[in-house]
Image (cartoon, rainbow, N blue to C red; front, side):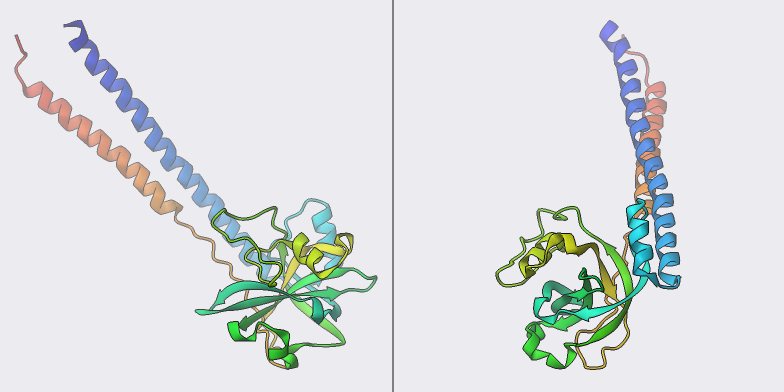
Length: 245
């Protein structure tokens, strides 16, 4: 009899724990929703702002500021024979983003994602008209250096074939023979200003931040509501049964 009396207590505690977990998960997703909406709004505001000189971005980075997706402008000379190729899909077409070191005044280098080329145009000789020479003005968005491989599912970079599956800036620089100390610790995605001589096609930055937190919040809160309904139905049914002798 004691065990029977304790069972509803244990069941009630288990239900309360499960309910607390479900509600907590739903509340966490609501908090994540507000954070994600703020991030998306911040990125949109940055992208709409006027480009700043490269020196401003460097100062911001040095002070711990977030440089991601900030418009920037600079000038330099493309070192075309040291370009790196990042495997990518753009508008349903398979190909590569062309990352080319831009030699700045003072002998420093900035890797610029000049844009997309189709698979068959990977090699420079297939798009010689787009290999710009002389001083160039570059305007685009700054992109942070990745701290490491994004996921184990991402293939390893094939340096020998000059095919990169994730943007390892240090390896990109080392594979071209550039001194790491002379390479700026971030990238720039060139804007959509048409290349007057053809490929690459600029303006390929994709800002697509998934925001499914509201859906997840409804899921967790919904499960909590279902649990309450099930417990309530069970309780009312139990009240209607005659006590066992």
